[in-house]
Length: 154
Image (cartoon, rainbow, N blue to C red; front, side, top):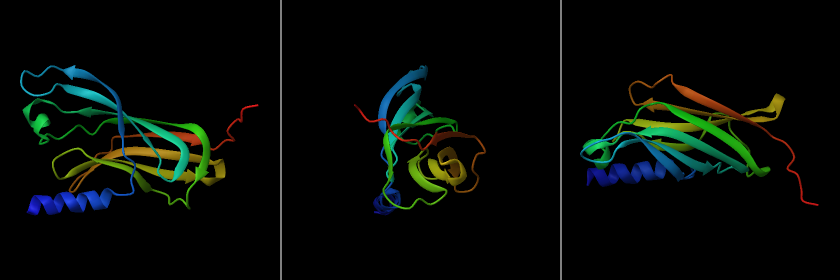
């Protein structure tokens, strides 16, 4: 009962965030039992900024614990966001707003992407980092997209 409540609460907390689509993966370590360790590449669209897609690469722990969802994934991640169409803002943006969040351990660790808008340079900035309930990690990656007019077909 308690596990169901925690799952429901986590689902509600993450609603309104982008959902990732796996683009591909490569194995990094062979495991005799359970899935191999791998690097996964995922894509997600910014839910409040039409015309922006972010690509995220991150490590996924395999083995028995990884296969059961009990392993803690590493904190390293890389991000590249690109303009894929005309940029339109669905609503006012908040600096530091979480646009993507994914659990990277059973309970205590998450990887998240936050968005900032550098108004003086007319640029969207996305930061990926990992945090824990007790202690986060300083490892991070950043990408930026200048907000430019999208060419129209003639």
